[in-house]
Amino acid sequence: MSITLAGQEQNRPELRKAIEEIVESGVLGVQLRVNDEHGEWVGSAGARELGRGAEPLTDGHFRIGSSTKSFVATAVLALVAEGRIGLDTPADDHLPEFGLDRRITVRMLLQHTSGIFSHTGELYEDGTVALGVPWRGKEWVDKRFHTYPPEELVRLSLSRPARFAPGAGWSYSNTNYVLARLVIESVTGRSFAEELRRLILGPLGMTGTVAPGDSPEVPAPHNHGYYRYEDAGQERTVDVTRHNPSWVSAGGDMISTTKDLHTYFSALMGGRLLPAGLLAEMRTPEATIGYGLGVFAQDLGPGGGTVFHHNGATIGSAALMYGTPDGRTTMTAGLTYVDDADMSIAPAFQAAQQRLVSEVFGGGQADPAQPTG
Image 1 (cartoon, rainbow, N blue to C red):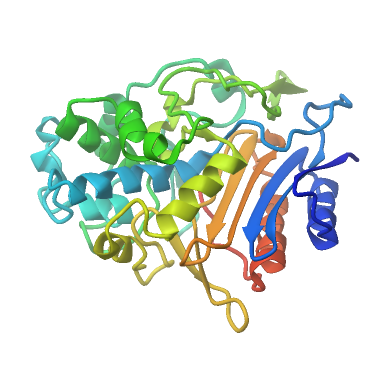
Image 2 (cartoon, rainbow, N blue to C red):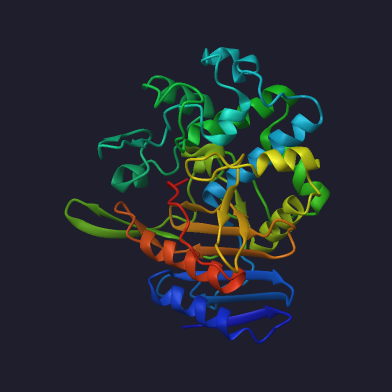
């Protein structure tokens, strides 16, 4: 066990104990950043690489999975503020090449109420699973450097039956955010990465955040993530830090640091990225699971109040990103681990969320489960 502290090196034994216990639960490495009325606390626990004694990083780069969706939603809403996108206009207006149902609006993409089948597969209420692009087992390992153009992912989704009529339900679909990315690119004539820099990264001075597209690289320095799978009856473990994230695309492909996630979410919640009216719309949750437009709203109960968040889990890596409504208290974390097809790390990930939320915000209800990506 290795614990390192940085920043103001406050004596926060409850935070040190929490990240130690998260590592003991099976997570390989944790890096945590808390900004609150006490100042800033930064610490890490575990290991940078499997089987090696390297000190864990306190602000290394990591894949943030579905936390990507918050950035995509913010970029769309910033374009709404510029008068270039209408939230309640048909997405088909911007993407006529797909023949989308005209009832599907841009808002529905951001709120997961479009009914579009997720290209990473679907779990139905009766327990049956409909597969999409491979992201488990040997098949994913063998194709982990394959490039999936976003248009291919959309067409795969549209070839499958919709989950429900547009606006008639809620279902977490990575394809909604692939489409949202394509809307951004269609409206601006520039790549999502370029618009991300113009609208968010540049104004906030964020230098550790990347929208990688089909690049397999993670900027240095970084911790390592792994995947365990079966091959011809043998269990194998492979370092998957480098892989092509185009299989999930804008549903969960971005890379960041705990510092950048804090900078972003504090600014977003504090009203520095979007006009007040659009921020209010972003934070207004639908009734099913409390999802707004790219953020979850979570009521922590007595003593905790409401926090907003968008966590993310992808293969071998995960992110936590929480903030109070005024942005003055944030908790951001990067976790790396040994993943597998059964997602056996999921209970430890859920426990880590609950423990850290309880310590930082005084609540502690478990988050709704979020699909990989």
